[in-house]
Length: 221
Image 1 (cartoon, rainbow, N blue to C red):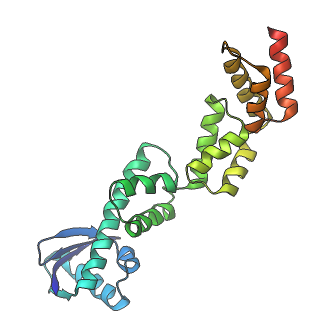
Image 2: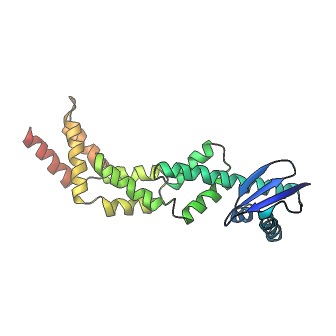
């Protein structure tokens, strides 16, 4: 048996100090999702609300509740880490989750944190997918199928990946990427039109697009 000695609260977070000397922040929603029962959550809410102006009466907690409190506290830390990653660049849920896992966060803590960031609009797979496709259009030589594969490797849902590419990878974008790919291939001393054609078809360019591009390249040289 352990005890919560003090609590502090703000608009959407609580700070809990235990008898063992540990002190951590978390959120009421994390307490609930960590498996703490409604009556215990209500008690912690009241304890922390009463602690705004000082220490409150102690609250006894069992080992099972202590584990849940640890999970809720870790979710707070995971949230802050994930928010820091997203502040640097747009990323998918899968990408952020992978980085949290690499730093030792348990799946349950990471999931709670990522769900909250999604609810706040700070994490959005659709927004990431659009931004990533637009960046590929600006500077890559990838065909549409290759771009879809790139999104899927970053954890984007297949349907979302395909629809995003279809919406953004228009005729002009396809032509721009195709010309980059052809120019890159033509610079190689081992340039082979047939192998280049096969590769471009695998990347999702149409036969007409590839044949027209190769003809233009042949005429130019």
